[in-house]
Image (cartoon, rainbow over all chains, first blue to last red; front, top):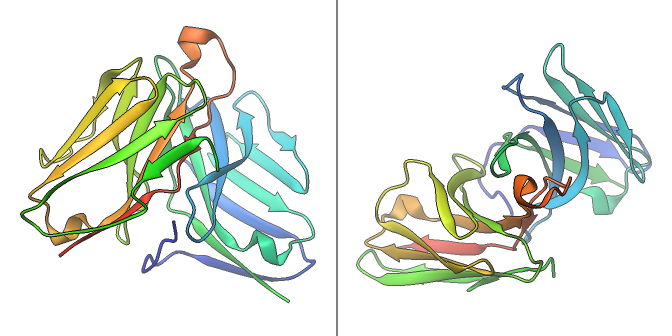
Length: 113
Length: 118
């Protein structure tokens, strides 16, 4: 599942620090947004989601912020751990009929001890 | 194991071969998807099946042929591929919100098939 060879933006953080991964989306009509994590050798895994009528949602160690004015989404990871090292994708959903997800390019998070 | 199983995990095929990728979901979902993930374009949507009907075909070349015999199984038949088709092919499933009224829009992905065309 690794994006070998893909030139992704990389965020390098120290273990224990907080991480912020940003994403810009394209369609102002999108009504649902999701963050996925992809570890090497695996498919993308759901982390957290947020509806367009919200601007913040918290999970365990993760927070997603949505700014519809500038079409920006961010994922905050508290107390980053080595196991958080992965590629992170945001996705926007055009709902109705079926769930069509459009994915961003992804950001590689590298956590250093 | 996510509940979506893809086989094989790795596949090497020649340009004249015919092969098939298989995806099976054990989640009771009624929509299934094929995505291509390559070095040049991450996570491109290829095909969407909702209630076993193909509802989207994103300008995918005819050398890729999907098949959805029932809501639990999805195939991608491959023939006369090109080296640039080498990529990770991901299958996903979801629950169609409008049919069932569920509120979770997210996909569950399989681990993918790493395809190399030689």
